Image 1 (cartoon, rainbow, N blue to C red):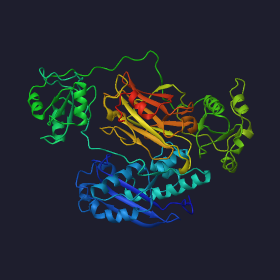
Image 2 (image 1 turned 45 degrees about the vertical axis):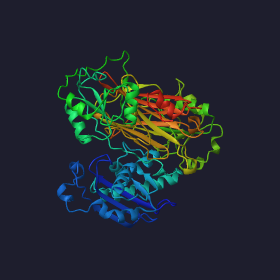
Image 3 (image 1 turned 180 degrees about the vertical axis):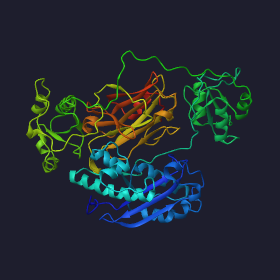
Image 4 (image 1 turned 90 degrees about the vertical axis):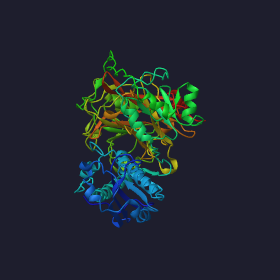
Length: 591
């Protein structure tokens, strides 16, 4: 396939790929980096490609093949930082999962006492989702195969950057032909904050509640450490964990005891403990109690099953007449659009939020002929539908397919997951160990973008957070153990990654919601497309468009029941703001 003749104007692009020793930029390191500064024609103007000696365990060698021996003679990050940051300066960073690459380079620059000069970035993963290319997943290798780009060495930073350059050029050209805005975001707008925390370790014991100083410690008690300690904090936490205690990072109503050496401490943790009547011990007092820890009660079996069992996720072909089609609605009132989207779903088609590469039909309602995208619709020769077309297709006597003049010019998608209705529940496939809940809405230009924040709440059996750090938002985008993480890498695409296999048993539900800023409401934003994606395929999808004046909305819930993970398509909106939403689930919100 021939590469497009030029890249989008208005930016100076630099394609970046990094290989790392792990997933957390606060604790893991960059092992190799490739940065390719591009000319307008997509050719490489300047490049910096190097291995880096991290001075630590390189982590998953089976993935990146960067052994300690290969890295031993490589420069350290601070040795190449000046040249790298000079190459990045003034350019828009392009990467596949750009928040990951940018976050690691930002963390390395900070360790070196320097500042990342990058002001904007573009994620090709978000761009691919926006385009709705007909692929089973949006991995770089899958996109390379789709665009017929040869990949020689996957997980090699230089080869990945070269492949990504070609993928970006093709994807950006397709976006331009569709007049879809590129998902460029400001790096300072969504700076990820990853504070150092005590790693959360699964406790096999039930929490026996508050400490009774006269009775002593019991396995399963939840402890929080505040302030400086005589024994290094991580070493102290490891000792407590080995004794069967559950070390947390913030105080909650479930906390059993707080450890603090300063009797006059005014830390937030100690203040909350005192206010809630939670005992506060010194490190020395704790050490004496650790000599005699009472055995705990093992955690019990799963809860009983529901009376009405949800259906399992399945990819069995649907018998609905419009299965596999994607329909874009233009024109019409909010009520008319909502009604027609529900009928399109009944026919088995998926409503599209953008004029993407995957759109097979366009439904034109009143005034839709004036939509600025209609010239692109005509250029792509997409079939035009009317409301009577949809209504007649729903009639029992209607033929399963439309007439020849109404047939889509491109075949329906071959990668179609179950399309859920609002409120519907399904069982996730038993082999699912990780997934991402991705939300997207109509792409707007940078000067007309909506301020939407997708958030996640990690909930216990009582449907509330155990502590404030169980509320994930843009300024605190990852859980303490890294099993749940937000991804905000597009102006109209955001997601929540969940490692189901490693999620702590205290968490019975991950609730994914969103809030819209300013004076706008979800009715103005329009329909929201939600997909639940495993690494290799989409498990399920649904479209939420019931919003009118709501400012917050619950999108989905991933929850445990009877040892089984389940998905619920929620779509419930509220007129209150994000702070009120968080408070409803037990989060303490600062004024």
